[in-house]
Image (cartoon, rainbow, N blue to C red; front, side):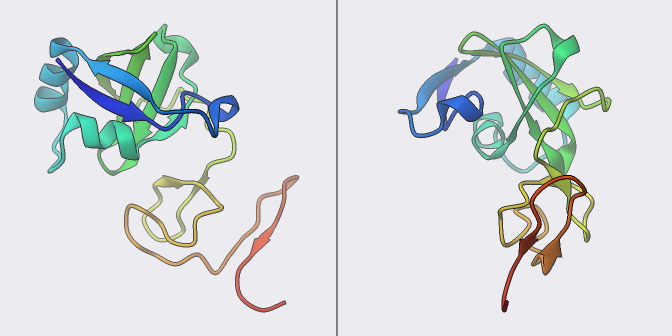
Length: 133
């Protein structure tokens, strides 16, 4: 087992010190067996997006969009890695117009493909415009 740092477990933890997250041997094995990725599970956790996975029986979950990996955490341990089957709650995330992966609409560039967002409009929410007035 080794530790990865978590910026936060959910939106309410923003600004708090990073929490150590232990990655179980089982989760590491599942990452290697199920995912085709050039990065470690630790890096995928750190770069992943916080999502809600109500059917996963977990305390927290992160989605790593480039390989559609759902990283499942119970308390402070990554317990397994699953293929995302779409039963997630992704409040505040939108799809990148170029690659289709989920992104935070506040970001200027897609972290997965590097595409620059010109303007993002989500009905019933705030519109983010980049550039001039």
